[in-house]
Length: 156
Image (tube, rainbow, N blue to C red; front, side, top):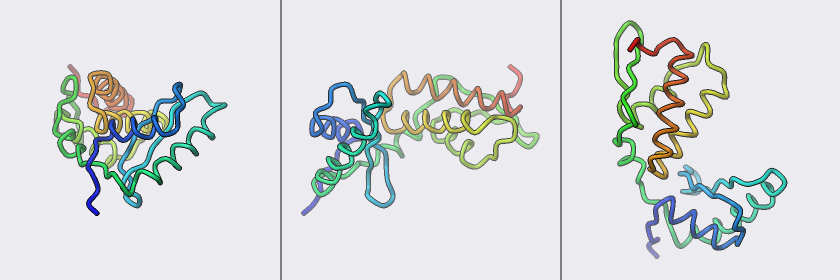
């Protein structure tokens, strides 16, 4: 049986309905093994139970639905503003989510801490999965912050 294609937002809504916890935010991400995976954002005292419930709901929903590949399309979508960087003596301009994601995954950090890199990567993944102005603004700001800490932000 062919699975119905759903966006990350649609799958997150289905999981949220299934677990019935109104104070929980769910994001769905691509998973190379299972196809897609829910991540729960809630108060720390509810996180373990909510994540377990979301994973059970995902197990029930995966045979019916697959995550459509919006990420490729969203990779081409622009950041809020271009970020001018200087890498290996060459000036470049980060203009899209995909370009920023490649920079963060291909370049090793030297000055920025692990948490800064992780936050920037998570913001880009969130913008790729759920392309909203808020996610786009946050990912642009965090990528620019990491570039500034790494010393690769070109003078503007």
